Image (tube, rainbow, N blue to C red; front, side, top):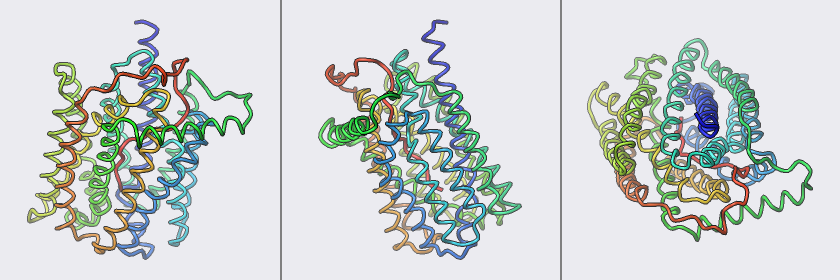
Length: 431
C-alpha cells in the first residue's frame, strides 16, 4: 500500500473512532433527557423551549467559537468541545433544580460549537489531499460509525436510566473525557496555526476568513445556498418528532426505558447493513447519490405520516423506526454534496455560516412549535406536516446533490494543501 493510502486509512479510522464516541456521548441522554426535565417540574412547552434554546445558543455561538477554533486548530477545538460538554453533562447529573439543569444543557450546547464539524472538516481536507474522490465513502462509513455510537449510547443510557434518570448524564460526561484523550492522541494536522504569530494579527485573519465565508455563502454558488437551506429544513423536520418521540411512545413501551431505547436505536441499527449496500451501489452507479436521497426522502415522509396516524401501538412504533432509518440514508450524500461545492480554503467558514443558519432556523421554529403544540403527545397535525415538507425538500435535495460541482477557482485554492483550522457542519438529530 502507498504512503498516501496508509494516510487515508489513518485519517478515516481516526474520524470514525472520534465521531462514534461523540455520538455515544450525545445519545446516552436520548431516552432520559426529556423525562429528567419533566421530573424536575418542567412543562411540555418548557421542554420545547429548552431544546430550542440549545439550537439558538449553538447558532449564536457558531461564529465566535469558530474564530476561536481558527486560533486553536481543529485538534484543539475538538478537545475543548469534549471538555465543555463533559462539564455541562456533569452539571446535569448533579442538578436537582431546573435552573442548574438548564445551565448545564446550555453549556454542553456551547461546547458543541467549538467542534461543530471541526472533526468533519479535518477529515475532509486530509482525505482530499490523497483521495479526492473518497468523500462519499468516508461519509457513508462515518454514518455507520455514528450509528454504532448512537445505538450503544442509547442502550447504555436507557439501562442506566432504569437505575436513576441522572446517571446517563454522568456516562456522557465520562465519554466526553475519553473523546478528549482520543482526539489529542490521534488527530494530527498537516498545517497548524502558527505558534509564533501575534494574537491580534491571527484574530484579524480569522475574522476576515469568516466574513469571506459569509459572503461566499450568501452570494456565491446558488446550488450551494439551496443545499444549505434544504439541510436546515430537513433538520427541522427531524427535530420536531425528535423532541416528541419519547413521550409519544412511552405508553407503547409500557414505561420501559430499554424498550424505548430499542425503538430509538432500531432504525440506526438497520442503517448499518443498508449503508453497506449503499457503498456497493455507489461503486456500480454514478447516479447512486441522487437515487438514495430521493428514495430515502419519500420513504421517510410516508413513514412519519404513518407514525402519527396509524391506530394501535405497534404500527406507529414500526413506522417511526422506518422514518429514522430513511432519514439516515439521506444524509451521507447531502453532506458529501455540500463539501464538494466549497473550495478548500473557505470550506470550514462557509459551513460554519451554514451551521449558524440551520441552528437559528431550527431553534426559532421549535419555539413556535412548542407554543402551538403545547402537549408533547399531540402529533396528529405536526408530524404529517413535517413529513410532507421533508419529502418535498428531500426530492429537491436529491436533484441538487446530483448536479456536478463547479470547477475550482485557482485564485481561491490555498498554496499549501491541507486543512485550514475551522469547523464544518453536518445535520444532526434532536433528542
